[in-house]
Length: 135
Image (cartoon, helix red, strand yellow):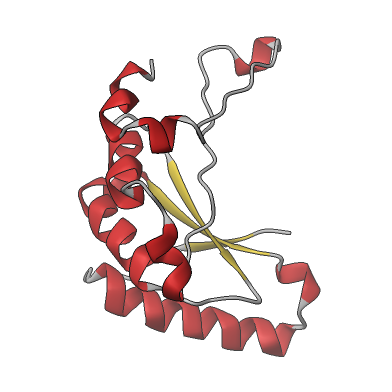
């Protein structure tokens, strides 16, 4: 199912890895875990088009989970590009705020507010998406 990824070149294909798990519950399910989105100069060090590859996977996905670390809410230029590529797939996207068990309730409210404010600027949608909490 991944033959179409050849268009992104060997720089990407050499980093692309797969794993197979023999479990009946996972029949007909494929999970894709992308590397973290980079910020600053690091995002220019990729030797492949990360946002185009994300778009390729999004076109073939039933569900897209965008995870944010409760300690690092930076929405970098690269993440903004990725979210723009995901715009046609709004119905598939779920936002997950991860590691919330590591912060107290007051910090959680601040982090949640900051995330909603940042996402509102980037997603440019009339309704703010639901944010799920995870450990």
